[in-house]
Image 1 (tube, rainbow, N blue to C red):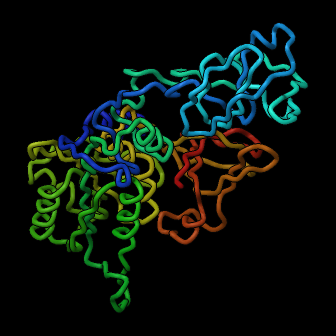
Image 2: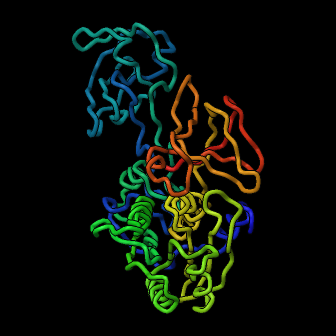
Image 3: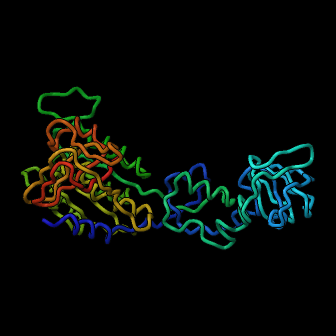
Length: 402
């Protein structure tokens, strides 16, 4: 059994971005990962422009004490000015409009009084005030977004503004999801005594889709080594990452680790000192590109916690994200929290802003690895290091899961 830090290191060392890339239009690029850096073809701003509605003036006039100017032109956004501004003159200008030649400062309209084609400046502006200079944000040839960036709305806006209607991205990782166990049935089946509805496949499918992956769904595998081997081999052949649930503990019907070895997999992790989720297996296969195999416990909370804590990093790296990080944050616990004496523990709860700070409260009900009901109320996992408790109102680390 290894530590969580060691397990994290192994996963990151063995994960690699999928080799294939593709070009996608911007409207399909959300959550995709750049396979190459994007270089600006333009200066940002493209030209000197006004940050406010007002009047474009020569600062030398203001410096000389000239406070009455003649308005000789009007420049709305999107229209190139055609007239230079001389001393004693001004141009009516609107937000985003290009500055005319001769001007270098904006006097906002609130600080002027206008009568016909004359303006009286009631409050002088500082030199260059409210002017956005060409190239202030980025210059031609500068890198706007680096390879390995996951594209979110703001970065897609940058690509659009930089006139990149399509971008080169990594292919979405294909993740095969396999549930094991004779006891499993589907939500549409009639439930017989002793059977369990397979929630894991649906939860993990949703999770991978949330992360931006492509899912490959397989039929449930029975607790039979031969049939399990055939199903696992199929998953390995189809996917970049395989996630199976069940069959990784030490029971008489837990065959996953044995079958992985028989199929030629190299097992790197067999158990992690974590609660919930100790029986975590990670193996690799070489199929052109390395395939990652994660064997998770069948208990639904354990399976999801293992994904949030460990598989997330491997997936992000497979997706091409540069230096993936877990979404840790600090919060103040609202109650006393106790840890497991031998393993790093995670308690699920909700983080909310209270009294101008992030506060964590465990959700009500037992924190059993089979209790999906209260897990659904949580948005964070509180980290309890081995043998360490947290008194109410103390600062703790929490992992956001929303």
